[in-house]
Amino acid sequence: MGISIAIVSILILASGSLIDVLWSVGIAALYAFYLIIQRFILQTDKLLMLSAHLLIAAVIITPFFVYYNFSIPTDINFWLNILLISLVFTVLPLFLSLYALIGLESSTMGILIYINPIIAFTVAFIVFNEPVNSLQAFAYSLLFVAVVIFNWSFIKAALKIT
Image 1 (cartoon, rainbow, N blue to C red):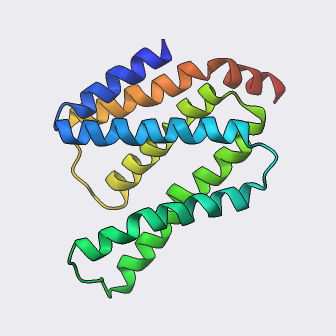
Image 2 (image 1 turned 45 degrees about the horizontal axis):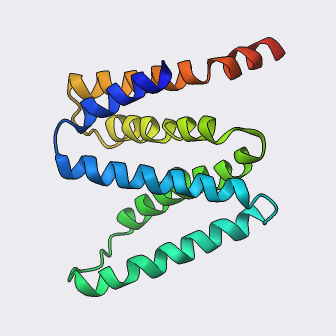
């Protein structure tokens, strides 16, 4: 049920652009592959694994800097925002997901990662005053409901413990 609701949410959000949908599917597939690899490499140090992944990503991305001609921003606020976004919303979730794979199933971890876009949506709306239409708000609300439904057994167990 949770996965079905998540799919509906994703289809609503993807209704704008086919290219955006293809990028999203590609990123989701790569993240699924990432989770599968991490499931088999549990004995390796998590920080070392994350460093290796970031190094590989840097090597893949670097040629694009040569191909696309652009100026490097010099505004300190830009770099502070980049630092915040990259550390809090990218590196930290990836690092924590490596530890979560020790005790959680990959499917649970995969659905929990949907919390990250919900947080990003909330930050964009509240902090950066991004315009949000009712369809986007509805789709992200559906995504949140999907995460809760999919993880309801864990939530219920956690509530019984406390």
